[in-house]
Amino acid sequence: MFKHFLVPVDGSDVSKKSLKKVAELASRDGAAITLAYVSDPMPPMIYSDSTMGYGVSQKDHQKACAAFAADVLKKSQTALGSGHKAKTLHIANLNLAEGILEAAKKAKADVIVMASHKRSGIKNILLGSETHEVIVHSKMPVLVLA
Image (cartoon, rainbow, N blue to C red):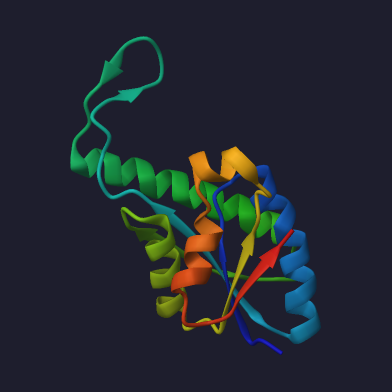
């Protein structure tokens, strides 16, 4: 049915679990897969890995994001399984949903496949739903895996 899946990944357990379903669907349809990681292009005011924070330059932030994205994408490729060789994209965008849509366009995907965190009620209101935002703004189909 679909020939090219764009799959946003973030390294979360939900994201990792959804990759098994993505691999199944891609095998069934003979579809290509592009994994995408979206990072914030702006460094935070302070990086903190202990009680002492430290400032970071734009260049150092980009290096840290690129390294983290490479790690998430590598682990996601492993979670897909050896039967699937996915392309990868690292997009820098302040807005996660916009970054996902940009990745789908760059990859020339025909469907965006996203995992749902299954938030509802007050959690959904407070934390928002990137999946919902992608659905609302996408011009292509969005498949949500539960």
